[in-house]
Length: 359
Image 1 (cartoon, rainbow, N blue to C red):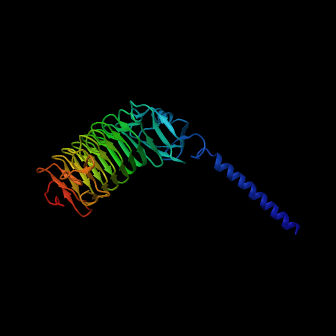
Image 2 (image 1 turned 180 degrees about the vertical axis):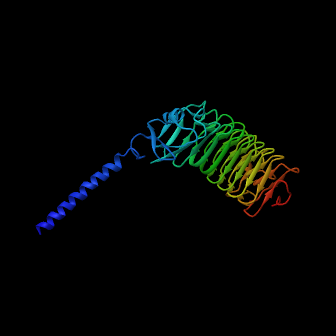
Image 3 (image 1 turned 135 degrees about the horizontal axis):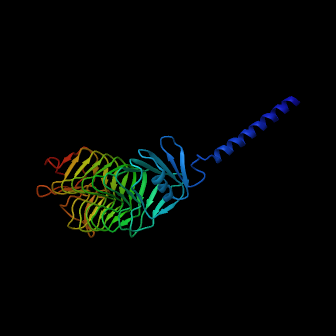
């Protein structure tokens, strides 16, 4: 009996000792993202932490001075942070930087109205990962995020919100020969006061691919494209996702999407619904295609107020709908092709053919 009690006491002591050792290791390790400094930088290839700090700006400064070319890095962010703007320029070439939040979703807030929160230049890729919110200003000048020529932006779960630009592109501005891929995430609650593109402004000669996510509740105050504006020689491919609740308030068309001359819109899937052109002389509550612009719709849904009073895209003036303006789609071709009713997933459209342009 005594031997049994002795054996149990020894076993209890061993369990307690190992438990304390394990607890100490799990809470005090330098590689634990939940402990230590709120900003940590990891080399993607090895997963090794290479830098930590209390400041987001200092993490990007470290990448600029000590990072390696042709290398991917991941920055984890814990807690809220502010910045006067970060320009990814003159870094070691071909660097890919992934930004993601841990814990309760961090907010990174812009505090300088003269600069974007992020500007991505040639030879660099910024991936905005999960659990990160980029928050702008009510009186900003440029867009919240700007992609310069031959730069690349990938959204992979982040939110871009709360920014008002004095000119085009409230949320994201993509300049010529740049690339924007939206895998998922949201661009919501942004405003372009002038020149359009409340959510996203795609400049000439660039590409935007929307694989998922949402572009919602953005406003073009004076210009085209409440959700997305696509300029000449650019291509917007919508593979999935939603474009909803966006508004053109004055002097514009294309509540959800505006396709300019010589631009291309390929819609393969997804939903464009509940967008509004709040301007009597505007057209295309859901989608507007300017002359010599191209739409190729092989899937997805574009709602229309003509037969959907609840979620239909619409052209509005005051408190009433405007007739013959293309609540769903308007193409400025052959004196105007228009669809007032919902264009369902099986209803294909092509601006090069007259087929399908009747409700």
